Every structure is written in structure tokens, then in C-alpha cells.
Amino acid sequence: MSQTTMPVSGRTILPPSCSGHCSGCHHIGGQALFARRPLRIQHRRGACQTRAAGNISSNDFRPGTMIEMDGAPYRVMEHLHVKPGKGAAFVRTKLKNSITSNTIDKTFRAGETVASATVEKKDSQFTYADGAEYVFMDMNTYEETRIVRDETWAKYMKEGLQVALIVWNDKVISVDVPNQLTLEVTETAPGVKGNTVSGGTKAATLETGAVIQVPLFIAQGQKIMVDTRTDAYLSKVK
Image (tube, rainbow, N blue to C red; front, side, top):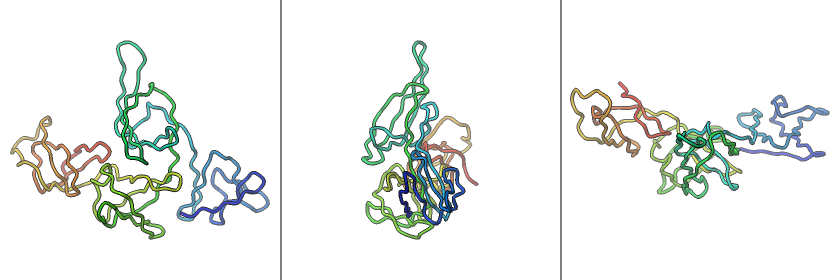
């Protein structure tokens, strides 16, 4: 994504591709000007989009939520709201540093305000894996981007999959996989005939290499719907 700006008297002249009609733009003397510093202008597909560096409540955390702490972007991997019998409620989380890939456990007060990471999402397509690197093609410019494998998203990659590359400070830091995918079970213990009730589960390897828990009645070769945010089985696909 290209972005060209020019400071003029404390403001910023946007590139010609900006129509000047987005919420953060103003027309002065025939020029589209952008004056509010907290907002970031992003140009994609010829349109002008603004994305504010805002805050998020810990009560609104979900798997995949991006926050910023100590100058680094973190992805919420797990979260649990806890309301003890005595004392204030809190949110227990597992966070992954999108730069170092290190994970930490951190507890927030319920309703605590946290800075959300200002990121851009670029529509891309997974093309192939080259050793530890995964190659993606930008669907707008057709340029290729190489990203070192991260099990968080790599376990769901299959050729041709449409994803979004997460860009922070002009650097690709992660990959957003569709929330739900239909995948084939390539390996699992034999299905238990007639066992259609919920409760019992078993491990199953999917066509992308991901291993999740599925109901006992699921058999090899069947297709299932998976929630990629939680690695959870959703349903059998006929």
C-alpha cells in the first residue's frame, strides 16, 4: 500500500487518490486536508479510509482482538471473565506478542480500558509455502509477501485461501484467517456408529495439519466446520 503525505501548516495534504469525502478530510482551497492527528489515513482500492487509534474495554476482549502494550502489538489468544464471590471482577487473558511471538498471561480489571493496536488489514491470498516462509499475494497489487510461519494461523493454510495480512507500523505482523472454515478430516480414530450425542470427543487431524477435538461420530474423509479462533468443532458438513 502506498501512502504519500505532505505537511502544510500543521495539516497534511492527502494523495490525489483521496476524494476528500471521508470523515477525516476537509476541503480547503481545492485541497483535501487532514487535520486531526490521532487519525490515520489509509488508501485501499482507490478509497480513503480512516482508522482511529482508540481504546477497548477488557470486557470486549475476544480471541483475535489486537491491543497495544509497552509499544508492542498483542493478540488476545484466550480470555476468561471471572467474578469472585468477594472482590472485583477481572479478566484473565493469554496474550501473544505479534513481533516476538512470545506469550504472556495477564489479568485486567473488568471494564479496564486498554489501547487498541492501530492496524491495517490487506486482502491477500495464500499461494504456497517455501520452507518456514509462507507466501501471500496482495489481491490489489499482486505483490508477494513472505511471512515466517506461525502455528497460530499456519495450521489453517491451504492453497488459494483468502486471508487478511495484519500490518502494524508498516510491517506485516500476522495473518487473519476467516473465522470459520470447512475442512476435511484426514486422520482420526474410527467413528462410533450411532454415537451422535454430544459429550465424548477425540482428536482429528485436518487437511491443513491442524489437530482439533471432534465428536466421536466424526469419521475420516468427512468435512467439518471449524472455528479457527478457538480451534473448536462447529458442525458436520454434508
